[in-house]
Each structure stands twice: as structure tokens, then as C-alpha cells.
Length: 419
Image (cartoon, rainbow, N blue to C red):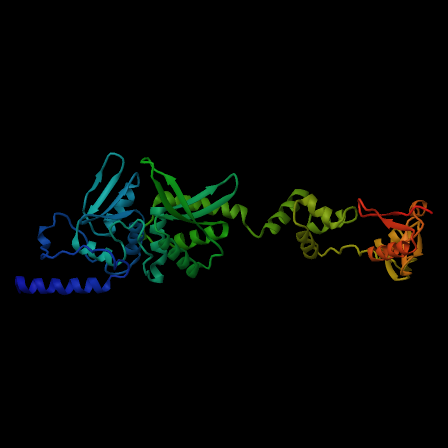
């Protein structure tokens, strides 16, 4: 049954309408839309045109890898890699494609020029110039690990330091929103504790500042991600051989370092070193040293040593109870508790200072208030005055008795001349 050109054009318009409605992440970006009818016989190379229409493990992997290292070049979906040509061959086989992988000056390139592939990929969020604008797509849960493994093989790393016994798993991208969506999705699937999402800037060869974002996980979180991505892989599952070997190395380092909690590992190391159970080691040491001193010797936290004592069922020596002596302060007669040691006569520094006074309490010559004056004061003065007000009153009294008068020049009080 032959289809006329008019019917074919109407079918194409309907398909275009569906594509526009189904687009999720690229509403603000122009999609590749072919307006003329497609003749399947005119294509030089073959490819599974429905590859990106239905979710499966291989499709999810290739999509994740495309978000990392893929791009839309004019009317083609392209991948350009420096050395991993074997991965491009795997992608070609998975897509049922016989498009050639071309060797360039410093890299290998695979380009698939097919309008159906291009339209389906754009519906999933891979858009032209996606570096800083792409968003994290809605990936079904069963294929999420394949998508992340693909993205890791493109724009991720598995880092190991055997000397420092460290492992880390990280991702890099030009879109902050994409990495934020990635971290949220990983937390939902794996319940990770923390992540290190940060901005990185560098100056390019053209003296321009290039900004990208990185998301990194360490230690137990990194190990969780490795297990999630690489455990129970099938023969049909895709992965990059170089990073598969790296994750095996990371697993070995993690298992050698983190066989259990840090305290338990140290516990076993000390038992091996002394070639006796911890119970006997602690029983011998507690006779000579305190628990805190033992913790310093083993280079562990003081809290850890008390858990070791409980685990080994070793009793700590009882603390000596101090004698409580009740004394009275000799100045204020207040009762004070004293827990052994050097005896104290006074309850506070204030009472201690009062006890050291060598002067006398005298009455103010004007108001009669009791005031303290030190010993040296009596050698210089004879009339005690408690305040400035009393001093003024005392001067008035003396002026009335004509004992003092004001100087006309200075205005100060001076002694009157005796008649």
C-alpha cells in the first residue's frame, strides 16, 4: 500500500506535534525538526532508529555517556574520545550501527546522522550546546545505575591513593543544576551522608575564565557508589574497561583499611602486636597507668579506651573518695566545704584581702560614717572625711570659724592669717 506525499506530510506534522509536547528539558531550545519526508533507503549506514525510544540498560548507559561526552553537531549525534576507541565500538554495537569510527589527529570520533535518533535524544534532554544548560533527566529507577555508570565513564573519576589509603568517586559538569539533580537522585537510591559539590575555575589558553562544577564522594560513600554501579553486571551491560579496573583497585584499598570501625581495627592490631588477648594487656597496664595514659600510649581517643575496657570485661580501679572538711571563714563566718588538700582560712579573695588590712576604721568628721584608712594615712592626715560632699561641708564649717578663706587670685581655700 503506497502513501501519497500529502498523507506523508500530514503524518510528519502529527509526529512533530507529539515531539514538541513530549519535550521536558529543552522547552527553551530549538529542536532538530525535519520538515521533508524521510526516505529510509537513502541512508548510507544503518542504525537502530528506535534505540532511544525505549528504556533498557544499554540505552540508559549510552544516554548517560552522551550527557557527559556526547554532543549534537549540526544534524548528527557525535562522541569524540582521545583513546577509548573500544568503548565507541561497544556503543556502535549496542545501537545496531555500522557508522564508521574515524581516527582524527588526537582522538577518535563516532557520528550518527539520523533524524529519528536526533529527535529522540533531544526529547530526553540532550540539546545543542548542552554544556552549561542541560538538566538532569527523569531516569527510571531500574536503569538509574546504568545511566550513572555511563556518565561516570564520560565525565567522572575513581581516584585511589594507596599510600594514604584513600578512595573517592567524582563527577564533573558545566551545569550546576545537572549535578544538583544527580546528587539528589544518588541520595534517594543510596542514602549517602555527604557530598562535596563545589565550583572550579581555570584560565584557558585564550586567557578566558572557564567555570565548571564537580561533585565528589569519599570513603564509605564512594564504596557504596562503586558497589551500586558495578556489582552483578550482566554480559550485555556496558562499561569502560579502564574504570572497571580502577574500581577493583579501590575496593581492595577500602577492604584493607575499613574492615570495620576504626577502633575495632586498632583493637585487633594491638592484639596481634602483643600476641595476647586485650583483656590481659589492659589488666597489666591498668596496674601502672591510668586509662587516659593508656589511650595516649595506643594513640586512640580517651572515650575509645573505656569502650575497650567494657568489651574486654576489665574493671577499672575505684576512684579514691576525698574527705570533706567544713570550715568557717574567720572574716565573714560563712561555712565553706573543703575537699582535702591545703587548708583555706577564708571563703573568698574578698575576705582574704580584708584580713590583710593593717589600718583602722575611723568615723567621718562631718557625718560620722565609719571608713577604713590604711596605716600610712595617719602619718599624713588627722581629720577623716568620707566623701566630697563632706569635704565641702567641712570647709564651710572652717570658713565660718575663720580658720580658712578663699584666695582672690586662685579662688582656692587657704589658711587664714592669725590675728
